[in-house]
Image (cartoon, rainbow, N blue to C red; front, side, top):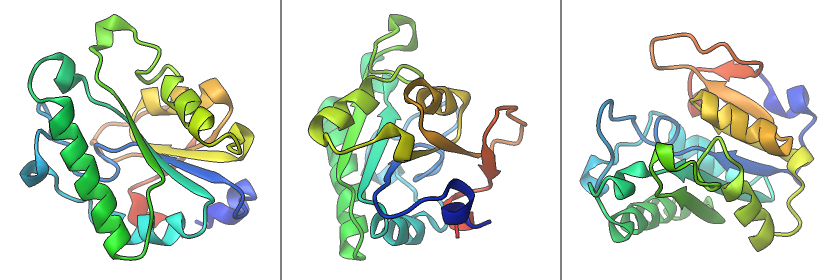
Length: 178
């Protein structure tokens, strides 16, 4: 699959990525609470390095309700995100910003996906972002709803062993991007 042709993407676009299940392995029934629990999805580093050098901006947006549950702290998440960014940069790529929502699902925070608060934060930091020229890659319905909420194109990663029926392009992982 050639995503550039599929979406008519050029290097003025912004790439938005979910984290858990897209960049790092999903921990079913648990959370990535520290760097030792952060396991890269096969092929994710290479794909991010490649695509971050093509897209104008590469932004990570992730729900982290484990903070709201008291299972880990903002400091823990910031260490994980520094590790993620540093590993990408060591290989020649870039992550321009990482936004996360620490809120519990039931709080219905405007930051927490499927709400669009993290997209609006990115737009505030980088005013040149055009959501119509942005691509969201995620592995959940809330990721796809987040993209729809601001008019982004979207790709759904299907790897959880159950079908998600959503109007989006579907792949098995970042390593499938060409």
